[in-house]
Length: 153
Image 1 (cartoon, one colour):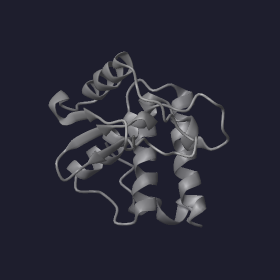
Image 2 (image 1 turned 90 degrees about the vertical axis):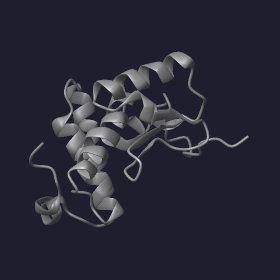
Image 3 (image 1 turned 180 degrees about the horizontal axis):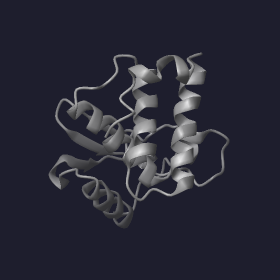
Image 4 (image 1 turned 60 degrees about the vertical axis):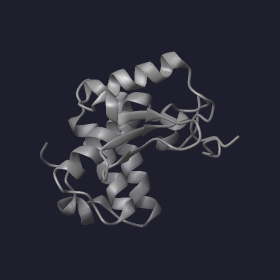
């Protein structure tokens, strides 16, 4: 049986029906149509802009084991915000980035800035995720921030 392989950085266990319902409910609260949301236990969470679909994978939740990387600590709310407020809203505004690192950093920053009702801890973790993604590619935020869709909702 195939399953999500995150190297232990994110949850890899199948979600319960209650967890799936919670994720769908939260995604709908952020404007995603429930008909465009589906769960798989063999792939990662992601937004598909070509078809305006949200795929929920087991990795939507953190692993539950504290890890140093910001990405491994992003909550379910933060992960869904990253996909919908980050990737989806930018795609709908035709403001996605061609560079994958910039796209992922942009999504985390947008989620941190524009998602209603995230805790300050969730926002900080998303900002740290963005900075870590850039740092891993030797990119400084100050050098790219003007090209990112992070200033206006």
